Image (tube, rainbow, N blue to C red; front, top):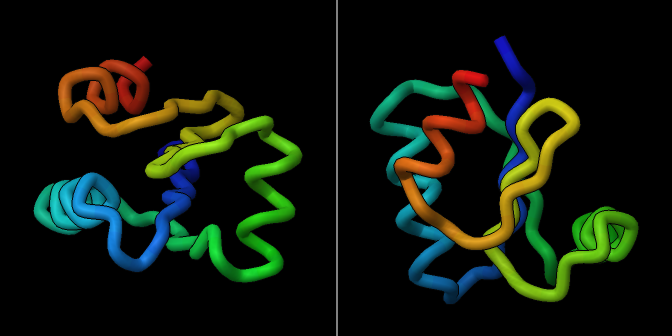
Length: 75
């Protein structure tokens, strides 16, 4: 099983969609708030400037698209 990290901001509707999707599929993930120091530092290291960002194993997905996530998670 691949490790999933979801980077979010509190009022981001796409972030909430991604979180609801992962919960509905019972996919374990670490939630990381981009407004907190640790989250900002990790996003800076990735080079991402927007959320949501999903890190699946060592691969990065910026933005939310359930189909693209499924492909990334299964590959």
